[in-house]
Length: 462
View 1: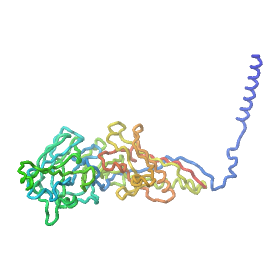
View 2 (view 1 turned 180 degrees about the vertical axis):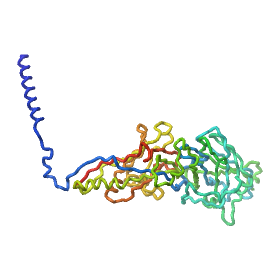
View 3 (view 1 turned 60 degrees about the vertical axis):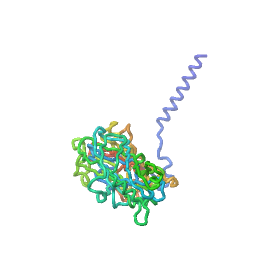
């Protein structure tokens, strides 16, 4: 029985071997049936990783910073690659819940005005003490429905001397009294026939707001910047009026003036002001060369991306690379090129956790951010409209495991091939929602040993 089974297995194996060997030796035509395919549908697929990308360094003009948040920055931050950013800010204040129909009431006199400011975050060297100057703003009526930018010049609206100055070290709460003359000015609530306290808008016409800045010019080290929580910062006016005096009491009444109202019932405006000095970048650590900023002739070794309208990168896709592919397709008898995938990659310069901490979590590619001209793959305005049905596909998130930013620009590249757009230059900036943050990203440029790479996968169609 066992011998019979062995003989059967042997015969089966021989038969299978003959069948396999016969199949392996039989020639076959892998073009069988091609003659039935219409010429217009014949295709050839290719992958091209030789698309040239050129990079340059420039600045972006300005960015809207009115009401970007209620925790503005104050102080300065120095980065060895991108230099110094100096932060100051303007803030309205308005009365909250007046008890008297006639402002502070008939015969009101001020006793004191106490300011409470809450600093909730400190960056850089938190051990240093700095002088914060608080200026009264006059002649500037900030409108809630207007847009203000980081480079707004507020100096014409403040005096030569601050209303008050105080020392600040690290985070925490500080309180102080403003001059009694300023408190009396707030008590004097009637201007001709208009009660300044009738609405928040009339109030802002008469009491324009406050401007805060750090007095010291920070030129070395990391710098120090504070964040002031306007929601936890108030001014309290203590006063007496005829009604209180008639009651024979020695008490004060108080009125709270708020810098920020979380319920948005007060039409306050705050403006983050930001200035940049690139001369404090350190060339020994790869700092941005001043001569390279705005140079569109010489390709850059690095690309620097910085928020609050600072540094940006220019990306120029080489038009000759596109013409080369179209010419090759035409030479082979194809009429057009269809793009399946176009992937753009940038490497960060230092692949470590410190660099990840400094870098933006995501970047964006734009035609023109200031004019809100977006690529089809990335329209953040439409993405924020829930009923738009639009989903951005650009990507641009930092991949920590690879140290790369990767962008899907397939539709954009297809439009370049078809002629739907002739914009071969785009901007590389923070992702739209991160444009007013203190981060910065340092990337390899096209004149480096690790230039950006554009890989396209396409099909040529007859």
